[in-house]
Image (cartoon, rainbow over all chains, first blue to last red; front, side):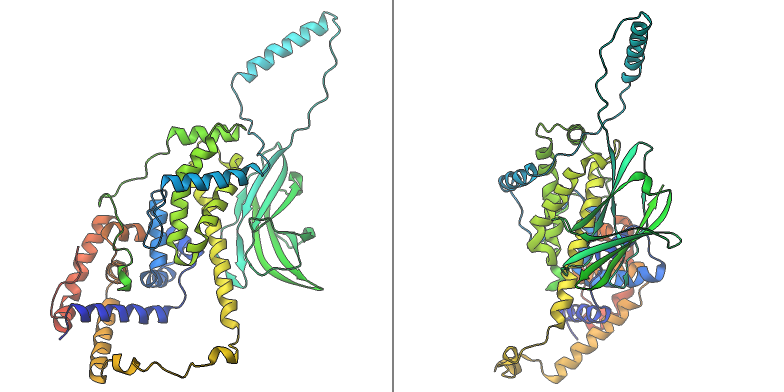
Length: 253
Length: 223
């Protein structure tokens, strides 16, 4: 007959045994799929068994639910405002070194009547035979759409990620794709290929370099992509050989 | 005890409460940054969201050392792409989407490093002295009878837990293995706190015969 200590020992042993049986802790993709209800009942039950014996996985789910009220767990320092202030100063220097994002131009209601008044004024002036000053040359404007695309397959392990729908507004001039880098191994070069749904090649490029944030950025004129689904393959290149690192799915609306 | 990891976690309330709406201050800061001005807007956002991002990454033990870098990377990417945050969209949710990608990539990187480390063969020098077992190991080991009894208790407990229905089993395992509170179990499983409470009450009834027989019937669940 055992008591409290034996119960604790039995629990510890049970958890250790289950952890051994169930293998590696769940990945972020698995946890996010669980949280977003994208698992079938069998997958869900198996994942729940792994969550139960991996405290980090349970912790991540609880923190996700609580965000932004995420509390420091054991081992995580409780940062003071002063400490965060000091980190902000360092971050600000880093931020200042980056190009500033282009401002967003939102439609403003007063612009329409103002434009009408201006048009009438100009028209009246023209009709009165007045000479007007030459118009300044039109400033080129480029409206850029940026899309982050998650890998669908990583090193042969299928990662379920839905195709990221990208909406290209009619005035969009350029589409910038940001591809997450799935493999940490460094290659001397990187290449990518884009094919349409039927597998016909649309674009290919080599000599790509990852950004300091560990992503690849590919930029295209928006007209490159008609609405539809595209497959992007990313390759690591070493010498004459190349290895497919991941593929991405791009859905253009 | 390893399942007591969350012992000190504090929660203000047990009842379920929806997330508060994003405050106007943050929305104004986002609009200012999108408009190309930054009268303290980026600092306000940083100070509001650095801590939760840092805590999230640091709470993942394998990412603890890089938690600062990962929180900074998330915010940096947000500031760089601030135009993508559409008007009416929650900045918090949008920011967390970026955080998810940073989390995914960092975890993949960690696993790839772990996998490659496992494949490295041991050098003969690494094995020197391996067969020289510490002298006191035999003294600390339980005798065969104790070990057999402990093994039996473990198997009985494991079987009893395995017989619980899936949802009830998860609540029970989170409570017993990880010592989570009702609110924390609710956050993990996505079911309401009251349902968690009733699931655990039911599980307790079902496990009682095993606890009575093998662990003196004492109630070790706590509340």
